[in-house]
Image (cartoon, each protein chain N blue to C red):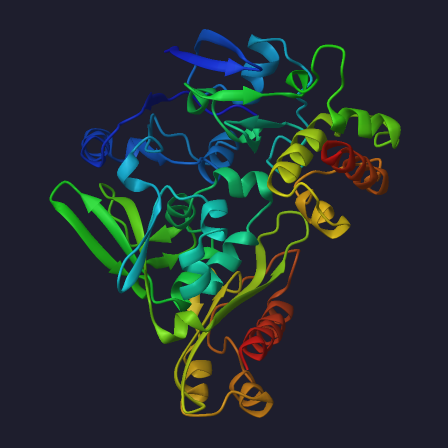
Length: 156
Length: 283
């Protein structure tokens, strides 16, 4: 039996009927067509599905949509301000922080959580903070540089 | 992966949650952060007909600093616990272990109550809670009871909880041994679960050990304290020699887990290595 949920995504409220077993990532991708959030491993390991729930990074394959009822979600689509890229998006562009790009939305959403709690992280803190996000192109080096770029930009 | 169908309930009080449990019995599962249960549902290792989401129950949240103990609400997340000042001061191994669970995303939403109810033997909580002499507060229709942590973990994914009980809190006593405690782990590199996790808590008087609690996650199907190690340490001075003597045969007589990540003899050996790491950090 479907149940009503009211979830705010990127500032806009959506009222939908969903099956309780629907995962939040499918709600975003299939109900709202926000396909920037990716499904990688589907086992809470890879971090490609990372979004923010009430401001905290979450692997959206590991939460039911009903658990997000009444809460606020930010996805990669909600990061830019109109035509202006978020400093993290700009950082990944400027520092070549992606190769195939599959992990990038999750990397950016996780990095935003890292920078929120620690605006000036060391390289080690960035690498530790990204332990739940996998890049199979093995581009970690430039991903770290991209996040450092964003940290510097946000500080100035 | 998609879970089997279920009905979803979201009680706002413990009483309501217990009534739902009583009504649906073993066709139901409690959900809090979902970071143990949702993966299980997705793999269809379990297919309950009713999910009772307790995450909205206010009395089950937060961390309270009492005179003689610290009460961690079952809904407290690993991240909340890792950053809690009272736990850092009175039981550093608790905050430290929390900071090593999974990754940022998991720590943001996974809860201590959910983790210990799931009772994965390779989770980090069992070792530290055993070493901390914690109590688990269980609520049922008639009231509540506290179970000593030594009686709580009964085996692989098995606990002392009755079907109609829910975990509402975990109590950590403020003791000398908890104040002087640490946790170290040898993580499985992808999952971050403990191949070996060792928690050690030591109380000293005039330089001699008056109480030692040394417990392991990941080593056996049932998390355990090693009484041989503890007895050997008691009365001695914690130094290289006493640590070597006490850890000469860690996990003796214990049934050791064995899988393709770590065979039995390797895991047993690493239990000794990590016991020495933990104890050396307190010496």
